[in-house]
Length: 129
Image 1: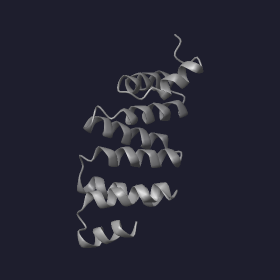
Image 2: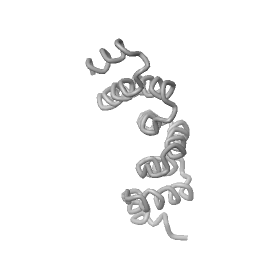
Image 3: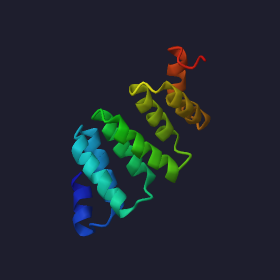
Image 4: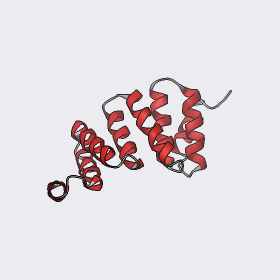
């Protein structure tokens, strides 16, 4: 993490350094600092889909599923092939009880190669009409 902080001190407009430091904070469980760094990365580079995705994941860990859904949606708009964004957005919909949208996202995630959520929903009988 020190290396990323040093990189930011040298070049405060280096979005990737904020993104990577945000990842480090997230791994340490410091979700608020992670969100701050992902937000800074997004402000510098609004097309950095993974920063939205990771910030969304931090919001999930804080139980803020609506903000998470917003970020996962933005990540998908930037990179429609980002399977894990569909997966995580679907999981957030599950937490909000919106199984219809969760199933849609789970199917799309599976189409893109990440089938875990769809399998879990099928196992729980949530995909039956």
